[in-house]
Length: 112
Length: 112
View 1 (cartoon, each protein chain N blue to C red):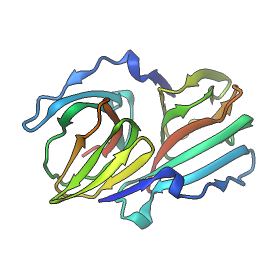
View 2: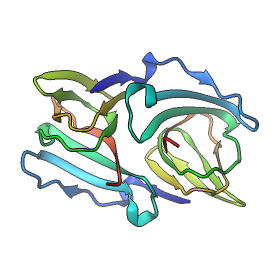
View 3: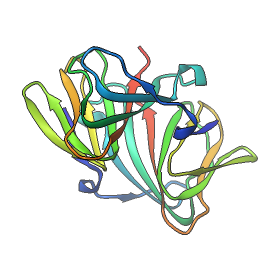
View 4: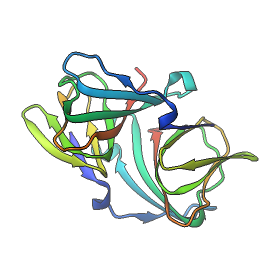
């Protein structure tokens, strides 16, 4: 068993192309002995967004704080604290902060 | 993409042996097209606990609200809002509410 507080992990800026105002903390990763999937915590600053991209693995997201939208192709869906989002493999997607406070969410991905 | 608010899903009482005051909502499951893992939201009432048991799959937990302890064998670790917990396969564990408010956490498991 491993117990860790999210704020004991320093936040790292996401430098990927298309990322604006995005920070990441890996809460549970392969190096902690996770066999199948990884738990990350993202923060997106007001006006920021994650890259609009697709990949062969899914995302499972849970919004902890703030308000924004989950973008899928040309559609978008409002999200806020308490929203869960499944992004299926190969679906083009982005998460955007449309509010005045940081948009904070967990994003779990399989180990690929 | 599937977006759902946790409170649009009714909470179901967990009836497993050893569960006291535990409710579950499956936020993202196989029936939603999740390929690899399932996201559940648990609530444990004050004085309540999840079953003390082990199984061949891991848990990845993130505490949303409240205060309690993650029990592993004869050890226990304090948890609160903002704590992440990895329970590795075959580790005997329980989550107990030691506070005065509901203990609420996400628990992600692989599809086995």
